[in-house]
Image 1 (spheres, rainbow, N blue to C red):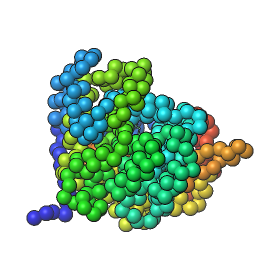
Image 2: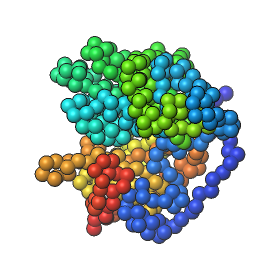
Image 3: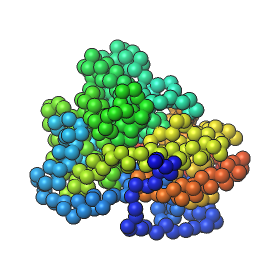
Image 4: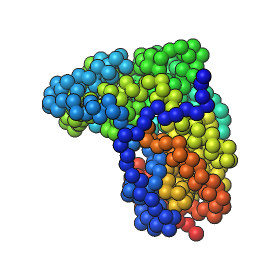
Length: 459
Ligand SMILES: *Cc1c(COP(=O)(O)O)cnc(C)c1O
């Protein structure tokens, strides 16, 4: 007998109270945060869907592992545990621990990058792009065309356009290409999976042209679930074996363990090539820490070793993917325009379609984010022109191709009734959608402006 209701495959033995607030209080709080939810205090948020990064709940096994953490400076037992799990999963010889994903990115891309270099990806994640551009290199996104059409259904919308990749590899000399980066799942493009066939073709082209193939594998377990359920020939394979096969296609991998590592902090960089590893290890020691801890404490490394195994458990992945889809299906049924099909870690609302009265230059995604907070205390993030908008030579705003709002679901944190509440808040926001106002940016930093920029509501 299999039941329709998929229960959370865990029970709760420690609770963290949520502070309730009123709409009036939230209006003031949001104004004080300059209409940028990144500037809100977390205690003023009811349901925090800002990110799934580092916001998950650890298991009893992981907490038990924390106590066993070996805090030795060099050669800690916990490092050996972490190393063994990553080595078995990736099959790559050289593993460098880092405090989070972007530290690994900074090390690898500052070494491979620099002026004149080009990096190519299905979609560069924001910190990936920032690290590449900060080095002076350029970052090109080549998702498949379906990847930028919110309503188009495709089983592997995160795929890279391999025809464009081939053309770019012919056009540019191999020595001018820093790396080809396949992000699985494709985060900024909609949390969408990448097929094994696509990864295989990317790998083939990279080998043919002598270009480094890097897997940005933050959500490799969620991606493996989609391959198992959607790609011909993978239905009988374990999720871990699917991930192992994908790693087998790459030359290097970067992971933020704050996602599918099921921990609150951590990352790694791994590769096959010793020369590259030696160069990166030098940079690691200068800024992160010695090669056997790289900015992590022993207890972190112990929790990582356990989390990176738990994430491949079938009951966990089934709950994870289904609970995200549940929220998406309910919102879609209400008429909220979403990126379809629903991805693994988040539901992406197409704010341009939902709020056609607000032009992209007035940030419809940010307007929706602000409404969700004021109406229901929900914190979400804009992935549109606030995050990716650029100015041309004349100082005119060039808007992003999509205006999205991401509802990212923390792992093992919220229950189904929390999601029912989110759905109800959306019902109310839909009723008010014609009254919502756009915004303008008052103050912004040079890189990753969405984190700290200050906005003002237009009238
Ligand atoms: C989160 C993330 C990163 C960066 O990792 P941090 O741990 O946040 O520094 C890089 N790439 C992708 C796809 C991510 O989701």
